Length: 390
Image 1 (cartoon, rainbow, N blue to C red):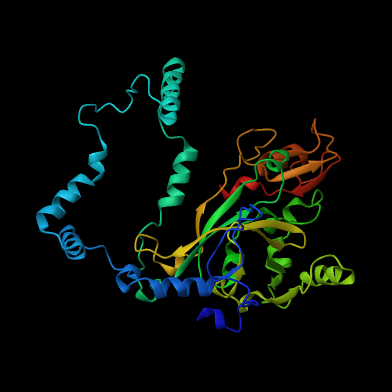
Image 2: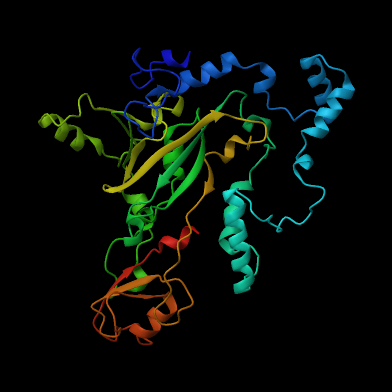
């Protein structure tokens, strides 16, 4: 079983392989369990047809399977299909779904009735906004997708984990409602694959002040210069050491924890590229950590773990699969108010506020003459807007 792997992250007999919630402490997360062993238990319990990723059987084949399962004649199966169909949920006498009956005790209908009345009073047009369309496309664009190359087909019985990657608090409003991106990850994927797929604006920053030579801003971004990063799961720091420039960011934390009795015993470090999610011990619903760029920290919460289904995306090359992104309004140019800002200035004698944001064109036209000479005193820095990931 996967629990016997040498890379189980320290799985012991005290840990259950089935996720169970902490009932005594009323915590919102499960107890620690080993991911690979949990998947193995499911594969032992389920039948091959339950794990199969083949296309669903036709309606006739499905009726035959039900008749065989319950030992009933075909006419009974046909009647069951009609009675249990989605169409049976509709009322034949009332086709108008916006007609709410009087005196209903159902809270959802009461709320819907108030919403419909408010729409009539304010003349709200019922249409999908850009954000709703964006969310729907993100969630559904890869549903049921199969690879053209059979080599990329996901294996039967593969585990599928749902990860929420929270953004660092970069705006005051995010201290209350923290935005995040959601991705689906296969249990057999390395931690490095998730690390490479996480989008963060701090990876795209360009360091330095370029008011004297704005056309000579370096092409290298922070992600190219500072490649160190780590995940923290259950007492183990999984460091990214794939490149020569990488440093062990966890060493300082481990030494700090060991210098005094701080309640963090037996902290360990491991190589991120040597571990898959099947090797990990985790708690579903528990906040873990992803750290990169030295001090850019993201909370990581695994919210779901299940077996792959035939209706899921079965193209392995598309995983980790991004299914949700937060919509952030882009910061527009201070002058034209049309284009996304690319430059930010401080102590700008030509701008009424500090800091001020400009697009490329407005920045050049306002701050430099035809020969490229500065027209005033200011400090200029390349600006990467968080909304670029929209």
